[in-house]
Amino acid sequence: MLRRLADQGFPVDFDALDAPFNLTISSVASIDVDAEPIIKFSQRVRELVRESGFKCELAGIAVFPMVLNPEIRSTGDTMTWKKGDRAYVIRRNIDFSHWQHAKSKEKKEMLATCVIDSIASIPMRHLSESSKDALTMIVRQAMRASVGRLAAS
Image (cartoon, rainbow, N blue to C red; front, side, top):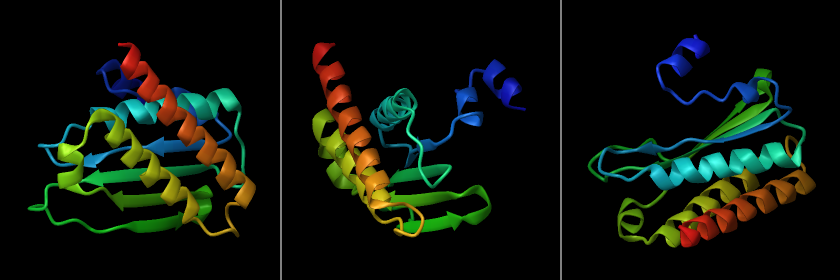
């Protein structure tokens, strides 16, 4: 099924299947929201996690930054522990109006804050302080790299 999706042009991360840890960032956005900054940021974070060889107590963390038009009802911020997968799924709202009026650098700061706050919210019994610190450094590095890449283009 994954191969079929890839053949149809969908971005499939086959390396995730063998990775010791995955930090996935995937947007939930209304149609009037530019999700491209979230996609680019997600790709850079994934690259840095893989390059660093990061491993921890968890197999994965999925963060869903939600940027939704206020006319769409939001589920609010949620966090779900997937015991069998040793993973957390975290949904966090980003203010729609702030996102719509923000410059590129501000959007990356909002994303980094969203992801860092999500990581920080995971209980210590599942993710140690040192693992949280290491992931925070990776996210901050991704933010700097993304901002630098945009300035160079």
